[in-house]
Image (cartoon, rainbow, N blue to C red):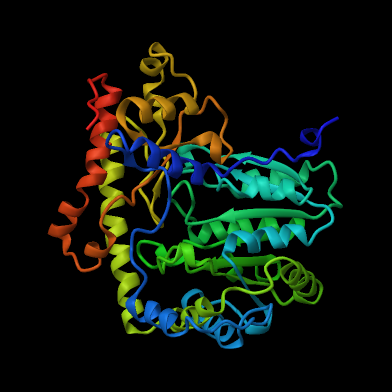
Length: 421
């Protein structure tokens, strides 16, 4: 026996790998970087200034998070989402990613239910925490949404209904770019309540709902919904690593001590200067409000143009409703692709990258079957700084790198010669 025999089967995150691979390939040719989902917008100046001003703040903050930040974040979500967020039940962590894992790690055993497609890290996190993972497959026909009927069928048929069931729900969705209506959330809440399902509602893209109409699941199922969010998407601060988790009142007595235990034994506290800056971001002053409003305009404009271009090329793509992702389905090209030896999403993305210089992430990374010819496209390869002051005419010019990449996809599908540039 060797050490290898005892290592967990946990691989490098595919979203990070595609970014590194694009870096390498770009040294020899042009690459349309649709693979890595990172906000293209700079952090608001008023927020960055506070970070710089507090660079010398080197002391440890409380494990739960700096009290003024927790108060600001709770007030922010009460105002934006109409939910009962309270600072006593809010935990600040180094990104929502680790907060989601902390919830899973707090359980000795559980069934974790995921939607296919869903974000790449949920399943590895659940398995690291020692839990069984189950998936419910969605389709392009429902724009990749989980239905209440699907959820109910799964819950009724569970082999071990006495075990905790944790549903991880992310919307607006990564990778789909779509979201849920109020009626759909109410229907899901009814099933969740009936079966006593615990939900981690990953609403990291909530503020980037393109019309500002995000509705938190906690409005309809407050007793069983833990909500995560953070600064990475709407504030353009992914590398700052600051997320927030809110625990409902009904679960707080049991869960908060466990979550604080996980936090204290892992990350200790979030970086002190970042917490000072985050307090200003969550105060949501006029500059930050205008910044978010313009983000929504830009992402909706470019995303809808991109979806229209893909649909015109015979690639079924739901119009984006939030965030900066599309999840195009190439099934309409299945016959043509099969003639070229392409029968899986992995093969599709590999050939697109090497032959057309287009970086997408295959649906398999998000829990889709290998033969489902779907992939995630992140339309963030534009100048986010310039976009913050652009009018509609200027946005057309700024969208050029995105549209050129889509033209490369169309040309490759049609079998046109691709030129490394």
